[in-house]
Length: 365
Image (cartoon, rainbow, N blue to C red; front, side):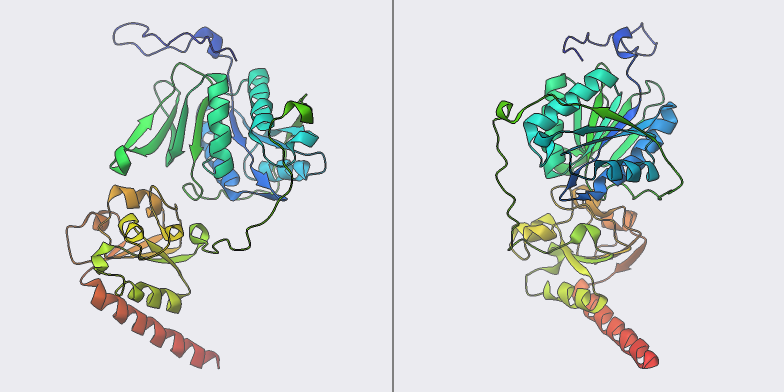
């Protein structure tokens, strides 16, 4: 793809914008399938489900892109991609692609885009995905919308409409790359639902070569050393989360959130002000600058529901809000609301759940 794309110009007053002729050959929706140590990151399958929806609206196909070393399970990853909605996969095997490094992965992806010309390329907003997406977009000279919370197709232009928080999370804006291809976006894990698996689906594989040697690459991968002290908080994939906000007044009162979470077997979440105040560690922050979560149950205590927090938890199956302010924004999207003092409601809920669980245990016994 040349960087000399001509700017998009209006076709005339009151008429639709037209895609330049040299970009009309770009067709299809691609998903970068991120994997590490033999496991595919679940965000890749979440994106595959979104890609399927976008492609169906455009009437085009979906393809996965799998890159890695010759001894990695790339064919297995491709077969799994079909079950989540892919029609085909591009597989690139090379010794220099074993273990992520920006330079060979960027060359591999840009070579594939230049040859096969997809109109949309989606990547997860992970450490790897963010690093790769930025360099690929820069190399191709195209647009990239990062950390999206929603993806759609604009009915007028057939362009990707990518929605993301902006102005510190106070607004949501929708961005379209009209004049360049491919249109690129990254999406945070757990923002989109996991698509339903269909094991009857199959697809084709297109093998591709990289054409790089180790001496061409500046960065060297010497070894993988796991972090033995890594935090074990798994907030993004918890089924039940109890979160607290500054409405709890002080860190001593935040203990009420921990008490309820312990009884429910839940993870503990928090708002950004709570994290900034040092009440809990940063790994427990839910929201635009924290984790995006999709639990079956989300209990929000003393949380007003500002847009910065909302974008991280509004996809929860059931949201229960506890707040003294009946006009708090969180009641606009919560499924159940309790207007009351969380310092009184949380202990009552903990006691009620403890009694309920004890009763169930007695029945089993």
